[in-house]
Every structure is written in C-alpha cells, then in structure tokens.
Amino acid sequence: MSLSNPADTAPDYIRNLPRYVPGKPASEVKREQAKQSQPQRLHRMASNENPLGVSDKALAAMQAVMADAANYPDPSGHQLKARLSARLRVEAQQLVLGNGSSELLDLAARCFLRAGDEAVYSQYAFQAYPVAIHAVGATPVCVPARDYGHDLDAMRAAITERTGLVFIANPNNPTGTLLDAAALQRFVAAVPRHILVVLDEAYGEFLPCVENAADALHSCDWIAEHPHLLVLRTFSKAYGLAGMRVGYGVAHPAVADLLNRLRLTFNTSAMAQAAAEAAFDDADFLQRSRSNNAQGMVQLEQGLQALGLPFIRSHANFIAIDVSSTGRTGAEVAQQLLAAGVIIRPLGANQLPQFIRVTVGLPEDNVAFLGALKQVLS
Ligand SMILES: Cc1ncc(COP(=O)(O)O)c(C=O)c1O
Image (cartoon, rainbow, N blue to C red; front, top):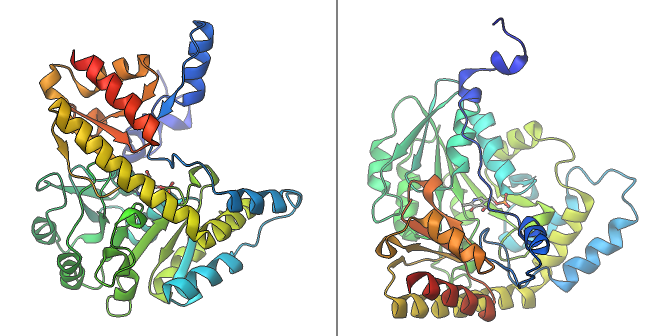
C-alpha cells in the first residue's frame, strides 16, 4: 500500500516513542462503579498528588483572576518570578516558568540536544526523560542504577564527546532514592561545562531538612559556580497544584534566556500563575503537606513491615513496594487494590514489574491501602 498519511513519514524516533500509560483516572473508576451500583470511597494514591487538595489561599487567588479569562496572561509571569527570585536569592533573569516542570525538561532537551547527540540518565529514573531525548532524535544512554538510585560514578563514566545533557531526579521517581548533596555537587562540578545538567527536584520540598543549610534544595546556590546546571521544581506536589500545570527552572541567565525564547509565549495561564504565587506564600499549607507526608510515610513503612513486604526507603511523597512475595506481579496487585477502591501504580513500565508505587495519602487513605493490601496477601 502506498503511503497514506503523514504518520507514516514522521521520523522513526518519533514513531517509535512509547505511549505514556496513565493510571486509571478516578473519574473513570467512579463511572464504572456507578454502573455496577457499588459506590465506594476511592483512594487516589497513583499519581503523587497532594492528598490535602488545594490550599484555600491558592483557590481564592484563582477565583480572583477567573473573571479576566478573556485576556492573555502575563507572558513573563513577572509577579511569580519576583516572589521566586526573592525567596531563592536568584535574579529574575535566571528563571523560566513552565506548564509543569515536565514542559521544562522537554524544553531543555529541545534547546540543548541535536539529533545524534547522547543524553545520560539513570535506570529507574523518571520516564519522561527518554521520551524527551528521543523526541529530538538524540540517543538516550540509560546507566544501570545502584540500589535503585542514580550511580553517579557510572553516569560520569557514561559521558562521552557526544553527550549534550544529563538528567538527574533527586529525589527520584518512582524509587524515591535521594543522592548525597555533596556527592551530587561534586558530580555537577565534574561534568564538562558545555553539557547541561538538569537537576529535577520535583519532590524536593518533602525533604525533612529543607530549612537547614546542608540540604539538597540549596542546589540553586550552585549555579553561580556551575553555569551548566538547570534546577527544575514544580508546584504540582507539595504545593498541591498538579492540575494547574506550573513549574519553574533556575539556571544561568544565558541558559534561562534560551529556554525562555524557545518556550511558547503563554505557556502558563493567569490562573496557574496566581495559584502558584498564593501557594508559594502559604507557608502553613506547605508545612501541613510536609507533616502529613512525614507521618504518612511512617504509617506506611510500619504497616508494610507488619505485612512483611519489602520497600525502597523513600524521600518523596510515595513509596515503591516489592510485591514479589505475593506470587503476583505489580499489575495484578494493582488490579486487586483497584477492586477495593485503592488506585495505585504498578511499575512494570519502569522495568520494575514486581513493584507497585503508592502515594502517601491522608491517614485514612493509608489505612485503606494497608487493609486492602492485607486482603491481597491473605
Ligand atoms: C521526577 C519528576 N519530575 C517531574 C515531574 C513533572 O511534574 P509536573 O509536570 O507536574 O511539574 C514529575 C511528576 O510526576 C516527576 O515525578
């Protein structure tokens, strides 16, 4: 048959992109339950969303700008950047706002990789990295993990003259591993300066040591000495705004300038900007997110220990659990939990078919998850 449509002639590296397999949306699960007339409380623990919901202050800020929806937003996000720049002690020119931090990691690949270049990332790291690398015709170089986390020595050794970019997730998703801040800084210093290091800190706000000087979230301070570092953060997790799609990057002004030129002009909406400003100022909400997460993590760890299920010690708002002792795959366990109204994520797509990942919920979500898991084991 002759070529019939443009999908047949798109570059191979696009046509071979894997499809993102999303978790089942809670709305769909609810619809299915309604059909079977078995309404059940649903526990959304699949997508690392904030179980506290959205901060009241962010909600009020969104409502206040809704009436202005006929107008384009501020393309530079001036007010949000002013807040970020004051708190992070960086210049506004060092900032780039994104439609979630996922847009920014994609933008980094488009900006700094050419077809044929290599980009280094870790086994079991965030799935969006190889997609972003493939999408520009570059070659992903996946470095075997060490203890389910990044092996920085091996990643350094994987850098060649063809490398254009390195992705690091810290803490990592889906394994929750955390790198030692000093080792990470040494790694960044060891990477040649023409190679961009993208340090993805989507879960950084959950680290218990955020207020202390020695923590990983001081990575923005490293940029002055390491102009090849791009730090990515998001409002989707600890700030409770996953649905608003807003994240930010911090880099050397020249790097930020290129990213700002390449991004779509109106990539963050007025509501997203207003919500992010308010959430960033809502110290009380952030504190509640962090403490709910810290307590919920202990609750889950203790429950898993009682059930005799091994897990990977996590520094984020989720935990990866090895369910091989059940004799079932992660996908099978996920299916059984779904029947009990608990939505979690099997990690088969992350080459961890014997694992599931559960997001820390409210205390009652965690109880429901552990109860349903106990049923699976019995
Ligand atoms: C490691 C990591 N980076 C980036 C993101 C992207 O988040 P968002 O686009 O919502 O900011 C996620 C989301 O799950 C993530 O896990």
